[in-house]
Image 1: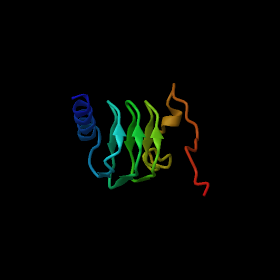
Image 2: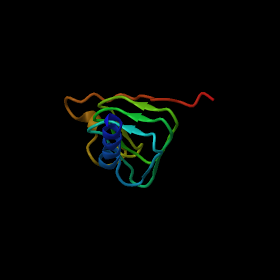
Image 3: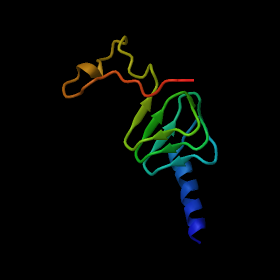
Length: 107
C-alpha cells in the first residue's frame, strides 16, 4: 500500500510540476512546489533530482545525474539581457548582481 501511495505521489508531482516543452525520463524526481518548463524545448537526462520550490525555465539539455538544490532558479541566457532597453535588475536598489558559473565540461 505504501509503495502505491508513493508512486501516485511521484506521478502527481510530475503532472503538476513539469510543464510544456519538457522531455524527461521516468526516473525524474521533482519535489513539491517546483516548476520545470521551457519556451521551446528542454531535455532532462536520467536520475535528475529537482529540489523544493526550484524553478527551471530554460531551453537546452540537462545531463544525467544532475541535482538542483531547493529554492534555486535556472533561466535562459537572454532572459536578463543587459543590452535591452528595460531597466537592469543589477541597478535596482536592494538587489546584488554577481556573475557565476554553475558548471563546466571537464571531459
